[in-house]
Amino acid sequence: MVACDVSDTFTSIARDYWQQAGVAERIRLVLQPALQTLQQLLAEGRAGQFDLAFIDADKPSYRDYFEACLQLVRPGGVIAIDNIFLSGRVVTPRPEDPPGVHLMHAFNAELRDDARIRHCVLPIGDGLTLCTRL
Figure 1 (spheres, rainbow, N blue to C red):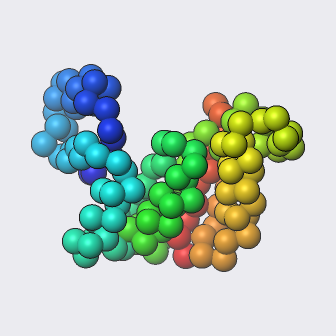
Figure 2: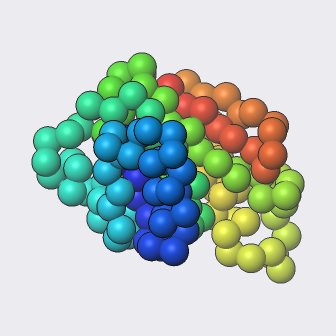
Figure 3: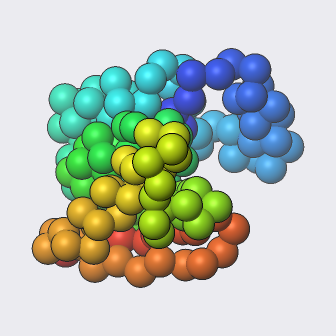
């Protein structure tokens, strides 16, 4: 497993739990911007080698994360995308909404029309989209 993060503070908490669970040696933590890590994995020839990717990060970069993950997961692999509802504001964004709301609205529409995947939206928490790469 490759975990991408920019915060040593939060990942130090996670590392303690990984250790307690006995899985720490199976997790490679990379502390740098996630897109940089994803691009490095592609450069290492890791395309099509992952079963699952989970995106829960800065909303303006979701499209870039998705495109990189789409290359990294194998056909039949899953990309899970968290927080796609933004408290329901993405359904009908208003001009005064933060830019992230408008970006997520457009991103959700792109997923709906993307012929490279099959997807479903789970209305749990703040929304979770599951995409299967075709």
